[in-house]
Image (cartoon, rainbow, N blue to C red; front, top):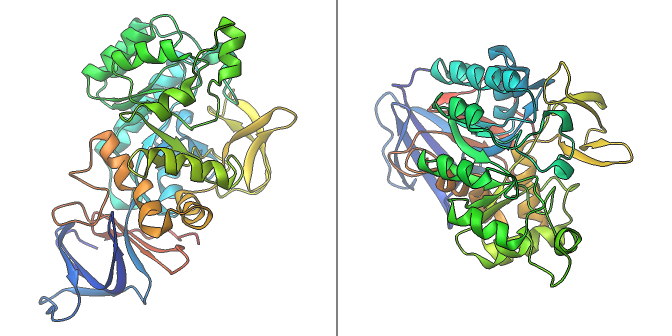
Length: 405
């Protein structure tokens, strides 16, 4: 479908960031949203293709800032073919924009990943699946005891000789480092200077360390309650008096945002509800943190690079390392949004916002995408009333891959 084609989406409820618009129509021209409003009285433009939402929802494409793989590929495999495989896999689940996310690994592995993502980004077309808005430089700067399912041999303290070269590729838009590491504040300052969303993750940092990180530009914490400090873990480091941890710092500071993995396996419904009530839908993002086992049968897989990533298992519901803990998710953003809408008081509009406009705002791309508003890119989903993905449109072009309900 050519970008110059005019599309008119009708017979559906449009999901706006703060409300639902029933019996609405969305007009798109040249890959952009031209207008949104009531269907009644709207004349079908000459030559327009009318798309029937069949009484379901017309929603914005989802945006994922924390995602590793899918369909037996991981971005850390470091090839354009692997990158496109993951982009197509997540497009089938309604993600139209994402930030490929590094794991721990050697400098050579991370460099190959960054360059493969940059190459695909430059040559993107709708057949590739979700668009790359930038890379999430996640590993390797993790605390030694907080590597989780990532290979410990691939973690290290931040080294400007490494990260300056990575930043100079102009593909990194989200940047993570554990706040307690030597050199963390210099990393945060550089990432902030370059316009990144600066985050702390896989960390055992205390409130004072978080405050220093905040002063250097850090504004986000990765997957809340997962691989992060607690009051008891900080007490084990510093003794008494007890200090606050990452959790308290995020909850106390209105400028801080965070993310949750709402797959039904990582966090119980009461924790999802607690995060929503404490921070609100403008500061809590939905992420998949999905690995290569997404859309694959249960079995053993590598987390990160196929060559030497850590082994984990998938039961089709979640990834895990036997007798150790979970190993990221194996489901798409459609599942995260459905669960947030069903398991909490968020409802449809807020849950969708947490998977679209909120990540767009936090990463600085909200003028381009993230909601159904005139002027934005026509990244549009057709959903049934249960929020199953029926059709995906990327910049006004229908994605031909089979969608997943």
